[in-house]
Image (cartoon, rainbow over all chains, first blue to last red; front, side):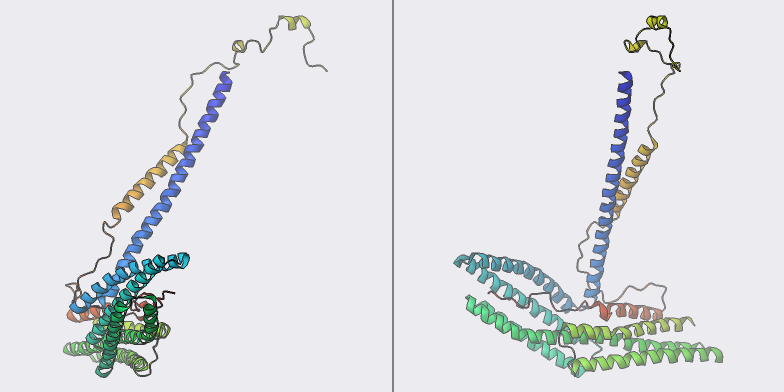
Amino acid sequence: MKLLNSLGLESYKRNMHKKLLALAICVCTFGFVFSVQAQESVIGTQLKVSSDTIFLKRFRSERTQELVQLYQAQIEQYRLYEDQYITAKAEHKKLQTLSSLEQAVQATQRVMKSRAQVLITYFELLQASVDESQGIELVTKQRISDELTEEVNLLKAHLGRIEAAQDRDSLQVMTDEFELINENIQLRGYRALALLSISELQTVHDKSKLVLSDIQAYHKTSSPSAQTQARYNRAYLETERALLSANATLQKTAEEVAVDDRVTDRDSYTNTMNKLQPTFSQLKQVLGFLEELLRI
Amino acid sequence: MNQYNQDQTVFANQEPLLEDLEKVQSPLPEQPVEPKKPPKLLFIAAAAVLVLVASLAIIFLLQPKNPVATLPTPSPQTEIPVELTPLEARISSLEEDLDSADPTRLPFLLPPVDYEIVLD
């Protein structure tokens, strides 16, 4: 009996060890997954903050900062109304009662109003940004600014009519009206956005050119030897060549956008931005050259 | 061929083997039983759990307490280290401007709203 007992105890202990080991492995696996998720969450937060910072860096004046804050509050409100609109519309489709119709009409009107408010603020923000931008020709800047003002006025009038709409038929009229307005929203909005991106690169180009001429002046004050001066000259030439090339691409793209109406929607805007990537790299190279010039 | 003892008298003197197990004596002399040491595996598992708990605690401590992104106040001038010369500072500022003007990041897009709201 003792033998059997001792055999049973040994087996029990072995089972306990196995269970403990399994438990430890489970805890480790759970902990690993949890820690990876925690790290991903931290990285995600950092990316979000970084992305927001990049977005807001473009709006530096007090006016644009105010508009950004208003826009963010309005888009949050819009999200809420959009959810209510989706729910009310689905319920009406399912129930087909007068009450569900009433709910759906009210929710649709609310979300239409909210959308118009979001777009009005966004176009005001665009207009303010265009007005403050430095790298766009004055004539083009004025034309784009006028277009954006017109768009804001159209949206405000549309908002007034939505507020006056009382039934589903009037809301249907508003849907049709917005379809027409939307064509201009896409065209004018993306055109302004493309020009803003070009203007930012153009500003970097113009300022880099000024820095180059200041570096040249600084080098002259140090009375370099003939050999060093020859080295400087070769470096100036390469930097000027890169600047010229970047400027030519920027001018050509700006003309395509402002005069030839190449940007009409999101796809054409994205294509234009992709075309600007080599210019962006070239300007990066120019800044590298300028840093090197200071170290020669 | 038979390997067993054929003498039946010897067999009669013998007691049945399984009648009293307690009388069966172990061929080896009894030794004091030493307490068994816990297996190494248990130590390894415990160490793994400890390391895990410690790493989790470090991760939680390193996590920012307020992760919600807030609106930064506008800063017209970028922070420039003191040791930079004016020309170096200008180039550094231009680098920051260029980074925020990266055309492929596309932070500028039209608002993410439903452009086809319709009741029916």
